[in-house]
Amino acid sequence: MSGADAERHVALGPGREFDVVRRLLARWGAQATSIGDDAAILDVPVGHRLVVSTDVAVEDVHFRRTWFTDSEIAWRSTMAALSDVAAMGAEPLGILTAIVLPLADLAAVDALADGIGAAAREAGARILGGDLSRGPLLSIGVTVLGHSAAPVPRNGASPGDRVYVTGRLGGPARAWRACEQGARPLDAHRVRYARPMARIREGLWLAREGASAMLDVSDGLLADLRNIAAASRVRIDLDVAAVPVIDGATVRDALGSGEEYELAVTAPQPLDTAGFERRFGVPLTEVGTVAASHDAEVRLLNGEGLVDLPSGYDHFSL
Amino acid sequence: MSGADAERHVALGPGREFDVVRRLLARWGAQATSIGDDAAILDVPVGHRLVVSTDVAVEDVHFRRTWFTDSEIAWRSTMAALSDVAAMGAEPLGILTAIVLPLADLAAVDALADGIGAAAREAGARILGGDLSRGPLLSIGVTVLGHSAAPVPRNGASPGDRVYVTGRLGGPARAWRACEQGARPLDAHRVRYARPMARIREGLWLAREGASAMLDVSDGLLADLRNIAAASRVRIDLDVAAVPVIDGATVRDALGSGEEYELAVTAPQPLDTAGFERRFGVPLTEVGTVAASHDAEVRLLNGEGLVDLPSGYDHFSL
Image 1 (cartoon, rainbow over the protein chains, first blue to last red):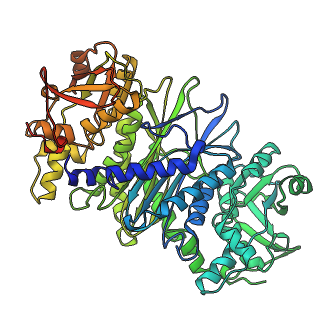
Image 2: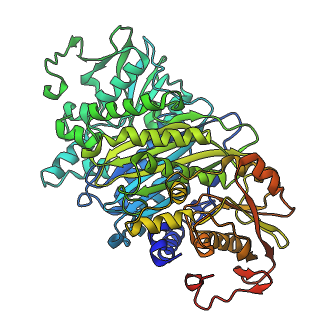
Image 3: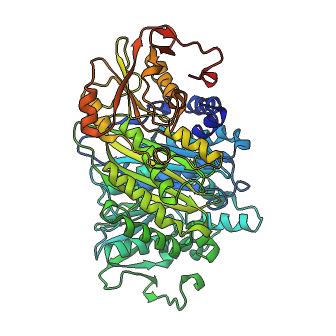
């Protein structure tokens, strides 16, 4: 193989790529298992089903490198993927990462590895493998595997179910807006944006307590509840006054804020919200009900009154 | 969520991204399962282990769009990932794809979907999910899942084992060189470069027949046998005159040619090479032996004589 061949076959050059992989493995230690064979080998507990999801985050599309540290970029990409397992009420098995970064930027690998490693450790996920390539901009692909005896779908909501959401919403939207305007976001908002937490243990608890449908708030509570309504062919009546809002944000922020990675969940029986908060240090708030309807939609209610949205919730302000 | 929020939260814009996903699903039909929930759900046969691997291919690093059709780019990225499952002697369960492409290039999605779908169908793999984002260049990440009761590692070669390789090598290296020089590669070389085949059924057969170590030829036979030697802590004596060379290529091409996705395999007992070729229409060639050694290395032999490589095989010509 000529030098040019080597460049073609091994994205970062043979020695260098292996050096970088060794650096990653050194930083991950015992977290990284099975790496070095063509594929990682792992086991799914007997009687459990495998759940798997993949996400890619691209510089200047999903994040700006001026807004976050490299470690934060890697953390939030990893948590975003892990959140899909949380939303199934599943337990993480492990992750695989595909990192693309400019050759001039190879020094970022250590911080990226630390962010991925810290997020995986927090979620109890092993690092099962990955790939590395040079490319014009930083991108991080994360595939996450998990297992559950009975994964919670998004299409299981039934009329009469109650609707709940974890956490307090609005922080990422406020932090994003501040960054866009060149302002400094409130610390409490920025941490929600830069260091989100996949609600793994919370999702397992909600699944055990009988969640009928669940997803993670990635596009905004209203958009994500519409996804539950559409998948379950039901209407959701959302009490806007009940939506938990982070300090310094508005209800409108809370309805539209994506990348929250909180869980939106329906359940046929009342959930122990006080017990949930004691156990996890995060609120669980009842925000609405599921109703039968020919139109799969989300109605916004303020107390008993229907909130009128003549031109969509974008123009809605409380 | 404002328009700018939407742009941030959904890489291609909400309507457009869903439209693109619908186009992908329409092209994949029943091949694509479980798509639409947070994660895909699947089962690993009882008693089997899960194998999983991820690969990313980036425009102008792993491929040039002037050399291949978009469908070929997607096919070879998918086959490259599937080949890692073949090299474990495992059966594919399914794939997940993460596609990044320039917004101006959205029309390429159909051809990319066709290439991914055709490769997955050929390998008997379902399409389990994916992600889609805009970005500065085309890149395709593929995660592949498979299962096996006893995956074949790369570190299982023992002194006395025989060494085999599938197929005839050298095509991708020759095709690459022609493309680099602006020449037209031979059709037989180009097809090996543009439309590689993951040796799934062949890998399952080799595993059943007692393969002790196996990997796919992705970096070049010599480099990949060095990986087996290093992992297994053995020496491999490679008979260069026995290496199967595609018509129109040299032994040197065959030793260095990567992205072959043929299988290199060791076995303690002789394998039925004639039966293999009858069954699969692809040759299986004995090319060397495994020996005990303190130095994990590959020795090149020509008949009985040691081939001298004073400055590495790069400067070796036959």
